[in-house]
Image (cartoon, chains in turn green, orange):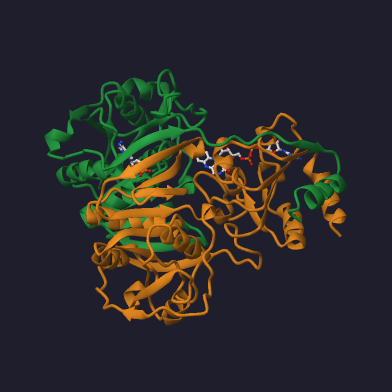
Length: 249
Length: 311
Ligand SMILES: Cc1cc2nc3c(=O)[nH]c(=O)nc-3n(C[C@H](O)[C@H](O)[C@H](O)COP(=O)(O)OP(=O)(O)OC[C@H]3O[C@@H](n4cnc5c(N)ncnc54)[C@H](O)[C@@H]3O)c2cc1C
Ligand SMILES: Nc1ncnc2c1ncn2[C@@H]1O[C@H](COP(=O)(O)O)[C@@H](O)[C@H]1O
């Protein structure tokens, strides 16, 4: 089985973002960028499939600026076999990304697309669901466990009320949640080896896809700040404040 | 034009998230319809018809919708969506799972997790874990939107009158997926996202057993119990307790964070609470920067003290 893992380059999750003064967006210059943490979990799972003899090839795919090559190299160093970069400087939306990925899937014919449930930059939580619709494949979102069967995947989904298990007919799009696994760090020898792995570079035009945005960002602002309040030393003092000042008890 | 709300339910009752979504819909148009897709869900349709602001319910009742499998439900929504100016769903796992699948079928770029409606095509939504707010304008002719329920008031559940219910025909089983089982967390306490008071524990709780201390306080206050990702990852509590950027968003009157450091991803899920209380033994913990009331203390002495003081 061939596995495709779409990966996104985002501001590192440990960095506190700064909003640009002119309201045009958040500051991306000189900011540490990393692979979206949910995509790392998807890459890790694909490598575990391969180690278990259930997958034979892992392709990481990124759509975005030239620097997304680094994100692909990162996936290759973790253990993916080859990469595809769909290079563009246009700010891509989930709908456009799903169309680009559909074109790649149609060419590569994988048995599964494993991806993050959410990119932690725009917090859209859409791309996998959209891709599944365009392919008319089964969809498993927010997945914390995957079992591979002959013609299906049994997946456990993290839903608002708890957990739900569903059986997905293959091929499928599966979006992963935090509890699926803990991604490995790439070892130095593997980082060296990844440098020689192939990355194919395409453009949206090569794939015949119009990626013009549908949603315009008019302005990006800082949210209202919360300030630190008072300190208490005892339970009595706390309850008194909650009852008599905050009036929430 | 009319606005369509996807009614979240479990074939028995309407979920509270629907009520907030209806309020958002009424800000967009005066003719708000609700869509119920389920099985043996007549009770849901008649309850939804009573929600204030709803002028019509569309109901599709058939066995292939029993478990809400997205591959079966999405074509139903797609078919009716084009008759509306906006289609809204709550930004719960129900809405997040379903609406983007519909959006792709309609070639629409969905707008996720809005917290404010500026005009019929302009919305505000948090990005980067709520560290920035984006004002965005949609150019699609039908707008598909998920709504952050905590920022819109709940519509009145029983308006005293009842909107008409129209039955639509089912579209069949796509045979792409099947339901296996549910492992739902059972609790007598209020639901996390609608509770007036939430008490959450983090890694500092050290074990699942220790969460009983928080549950006892929750029962005294009529509160819901939540957790940080670290506490869920460690297996102290089930996944649906997680509050944060990638878990649930809550905005109760009172949020008590116990043994939680206050990482940005956690703050994203609770910083719109009215009053935040932090109990943490590390006075440098970032949670104190957003807490209205901070108590630097060891939780293993502070929580029992709080419990007896509440008597
Ligand atoms: C992609 C991604 C998504 C994430 N999504 C979420 C999310 O949705 N929700 C979320 O919560 N996190 C999320 N996180 C994780 C987040 O970054 C933090 O790691 C997490 O919130 C930390 O949990 P914590 O505060 O319980 O643990 P810690 O950071 O370890 O803090 C424990 C705190 O307990 C205090 N403590 C310890 N013992 C005691 C004691 N005896 N008495 C009093 N205080 C004590 C310590 O001083 C410390 O401040 C996400 C991370 C990533 C990368
Ligand atoms: N530009 C991109 N290139 C490749 N994959 C992406 C891109 N954007 C999003 N994805 C995939 O879609 C998932 C969900 O992203 P989103 O829908 O933006 O929250 C991510 O975890 C990735 O797997």
